[in-house]
Length: 323
Image 1 (cartoon, helix red, strand yellow):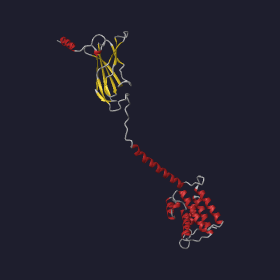
Image 2: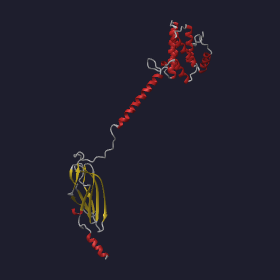
Image 3: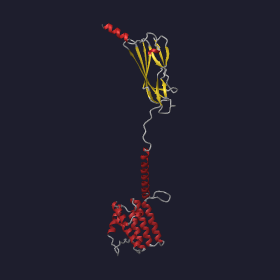
Image 4: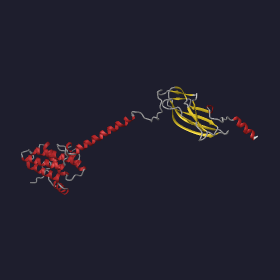
């Protein structure tokens, strides 16, 4: 019974001819049978042979001049129960053009053994696939997948605030440098202490030449304010004397009482129409010079000396005269 069943199964199974491979031994399939231009399909080529031959599929008619482009290929061979063999070639094709496109032909080559001559025949299937032209139908080349991209306005949403922030920081740095760096007319950097000493010496020479003491006190106030602004980095030129006192106290500046006494004296002369003499004005210049050039020990002594000074009549502090 087993032998009968095997005989019936062998009779029912399709067999290939024992001779050379023919067109009847070739089967093709394409999935899907319709697609958009540029999409891919699987082109399956099946060649059955007697298993004693070396069979290959060559020269698939696809490329830039055709409606198809090869995107990938794989192949395998398996033995069938009837003793024959089956070559399966799977080709990924990108389809182009528009309308029905006939599947590409190819060449089947076979050789009985290494010493025998290779024989070939061309095969062109009659079936086709339908290409729906969603893109330009003149496109015939396989393109790499386009990278994803976001909305075009998104970079501007980030760029505009970033540029505004950079400009704001640049303006802040420029304003800070303009406030805290003293330059001469040629643009060179100047030491605030040296600059103030030169101004005080120039003011002393002007008093000798006849400058009024009231004008001398006004110039002295400007020199001290400019020195404090560039030395301790706050807007002393734009502040009143009480604001300057708060700034110096927050920075714990040594002998700040001395310079505040000079500024208050200058304010009194300017706004209360005070009448200082030239000796008082020269004495104030010497005190200002000591404040600018003094060492920490000298400044502490100067502060103690200023604290022991008596207030002038009318409640305003008087500068101590040192002749």
